[in-house]
Image 1 (cartoon, helix red, strand yellow):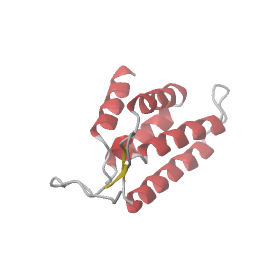
Image 2 (cartoon, rainbow, N blue to C red):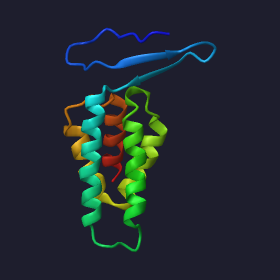
Image 3 (cartoon, rainbow, N blue to C red):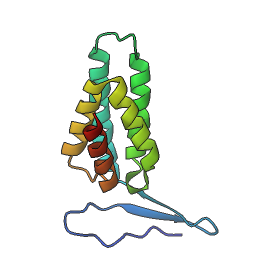
Image 4 (tube, helix red, strand yellow):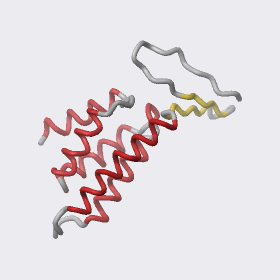
Length: 130
């Protein structure tokens, strides 16, 4: 099946939609490569800040990086990201390392790439519960 582009609303970025044949009718709405590069750079910066953190008996740096990698992979899925996974992982990050959570959320919210609305709602929900 050939890729097709959705109609674009003003201010939206292009996303490639790929369809996979019947019976699954699976589609992926992933961000374009340049956005994936921006996301990767952002998460590299965050992981660098994790490396600079003092040792913490409650959570080690590798565990924080693991959470961040899961969040990054899910964000890379764009509109196809799983809200339940993101909410769980962002909540875990918020509980384990509020400083890293704050930096991550600030960078995500201030980024120039398309961040799905449901991700913004999850971030707001977690911030309000803290």
